[in-house]
Amino acid sequence: MSLLDVATPINRPDTPTQFHTLTVVSLIPLVFAIAWAFVDARTIDGVHVWVKPLKFAVSLTLFFATIAVVERYLSETARSSKIMLATGWAVSLAYLFELGYLIYMAAQAEKSHFNDSTPWHEAMYVLMGAGAVTLVAGVGVVGWVAKRDSGASLGAGLREGIWLGFLFAFLLTLLVAGYLGSNEGAYVGLHPEGAPTVPLMGWSGVTGDLRPAHFMSIHAMQALPLLGWWLDRRDDSGAVIKVRLATLAYTALTLGLFALALLGQPLIPMQ
Image 1: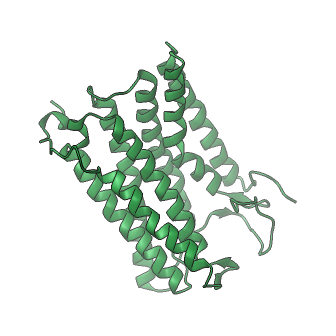
Image 2 (image 1 turned 45 degrees about the horizontal axis):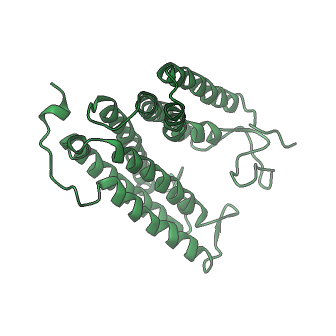
């Protein structure tokens, strides 16, 4: 008997699910960061103070929107199960803490990440790490629910894409982001001030940068489900096998980018 079997469904067919609500809520700091950037010209290490909150707001909006789309395919029993409800609350609290602290530190024109200037900043950074783990662990739980939900309106390829995409987003992010946190910075090697970076992304063009691998790891939750959906649309009888092979290739590519950064090599040399 699974956790889904023993869960008590909550009848809420006409109300938004938690992740639909989180998607909408996550637009608020996104709009705020964009608007406030026009009236606040301060910088941290040459970067506008509101760039980091803006990037995180965009990323988390996409994060919640992806889960909200998956929720639409789940059965009502799965959507309203205790495990999904608990996951939604845990992720909501982690999100509110993460974005709240990012916005607070931007308003102070102080670094939110890799800031050990005081014991308080050190403690808050540890809590941010715990919040990040909670967020990606929630992805793994939703993927497991989708895999186990026999009543879900999912083709074989899409189900496998959600399960493996969400699982490996959790595992790979845990590895790459965990190392990034312990490294106390995104760079492996020296990135001099004013050195060239990849346009838009800001990744180093002169030394190892852990962010490309981090980008790949978290976006497994979009890439692999999209592949599964596309294969189902084509009525591909080998959809499950192809999604599994794509998962291996995607994992190898992510680990390759991780290794490249550890060797101190930029993704795109710009010198």
